[in-house]
Image 1 (cartoon, rainbow, N blue to C red):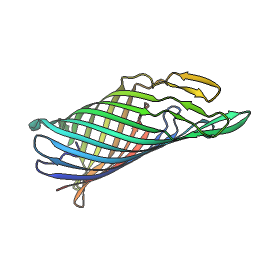
Image 2 (cartoon, rainbow, N blue to C red; image 1 turned 90 degrees about the vertical axis):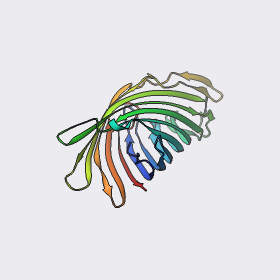
Image 3 (tube, one colour; image 1 turned 180 degrees about the vertical axis):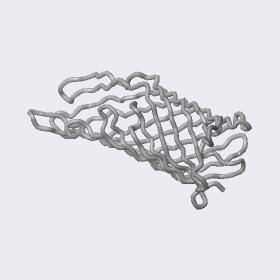
Image 4 (cartoon, rainbow, N blue to C red; image 1 turned 135 degrees about the horizontal axis):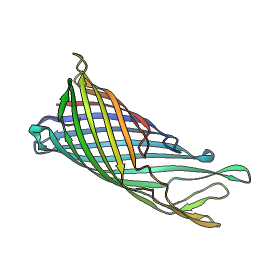
Length: 275
């Protein structure tokens, strides 16, 4: 909803995230950079954004996973009961990425590596309801929301090179459905033109485990491993500042989660102009 502008206005923004992804056995970093444009036609505000994503994970025995991707996202913001501040958002995205995988393993007491660079693709759908400024208490404005997303990802099959025991991995596909409910709050910081903003959110993942992994160690044996169990419920919280800066609106927010597939902590920053 931060992207919404008055009817007849255009908007442009740049945004970026950087964070740590180290819940459970994970050990890595994530980052995102995005720019987008939008126009409020009245019955709907249409937004289009392009972005780049980066993610890396340190694996056992010195292995590593690096994924670089790009995405295209289209969304529409629809007034449901504008006089009451209730809006619906419908969106879809498509992502294309390449994974550089280095698998480390022990062979006769020595560490060896086998590598590959498969492609991956993902798409997703999102439906959300926001109730802006639903109520206020002691000059703090509260805006609850409910958000439902579905995403489907696929990693192409690949055969590793290098090392004494390279492996061949089959295609791997996975679908994820998540429901989030939360509340955003804002409190003016005196006459500075900035607000202190905060968010608390509860999330539920309907899927309880990842897709399985199958293939074979080339010339040796085949394998078919069950997917890892997911944390299905977690909490997310964030604090930051937002307000007018120069001729636009700037925001910076620090976020964290208790567990789950989301990053453990990240900083999100954006700058938006309306004209």
